[in-house]
Image (tube, rainbow, N blue to C red; front, side, top):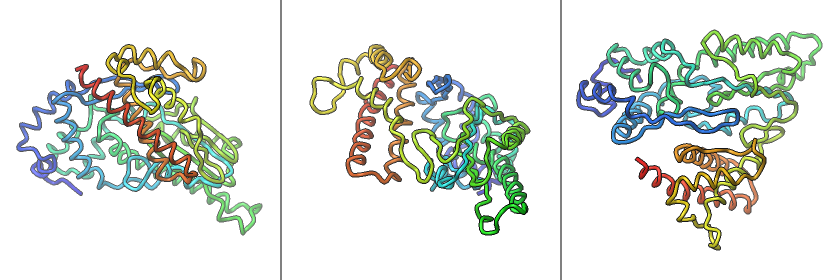
Length: 367
């Protein structure tokens, strides 16, 4: 889909006139609530949309996302935030690989420059004024805000050129390998380097290419990213043989679930439970006192201090639980478990949704 005229953009956004849209965008910074959530090596900054202004802006972003951004092509390696794709399809191409390389892009959403965003918007928005308004709708201070509805889809669109360059580099290495006289003809089909990406997670798998013995590969990927203003988080680089563990999954001869992923969620659910009830029920006293709730969750740890997640406000906890819920649902869609395991996963989803509903009510009252 292309937008040739400003009037068409306004129709897509279901808004009366340009001036109304401008007034909303002029106050967009006030609509965002910036908060941080804990991650493995620090904190992640999230832009949430709050209040009447936030809800209005979010509706506009949802319309633009649904009617425009979803219809733009993404590169084949991209597996995140796309219809028909999931974390499972991100992992599937690598099943059965011997060698694995996982790379993490540092500060992913904030690394998209204003120039890159504008350049890619101009590919499907012909009208300059419409392009400027679309840019303002999707950005904060010229960057993609993590938490905005439009940011994931735009990141795939803008990153497509890099995905294609990386695929081309892998193909060059494959071609070189096939030309080697030492390679048996019947094994030519295995001379491949598979690449997929889920947001800032890049995964490579190969049957012949040992990434540990070929560090020039890592340096070249870093160089390609650097040319576009991206950098790698070297602390998150993983190189393994035969199988790799990522975000609660283990990929090897198949894809299986890592039980460590659910331990933190179970800890939080237990903290919020009414201990006197036989069935799972929330502790009403804790739900009515967010400060005590957070203290209880942060105090009770299933492991050592390093494994404990600390939440400083309800926003962080809601965001974390929402991510856990989405992950559990994706697992249920693809995981071939025994009946008991499926039952336990569904129970976790129900309990997480119960807690999320209560916390969102607490979150709403805090404003």
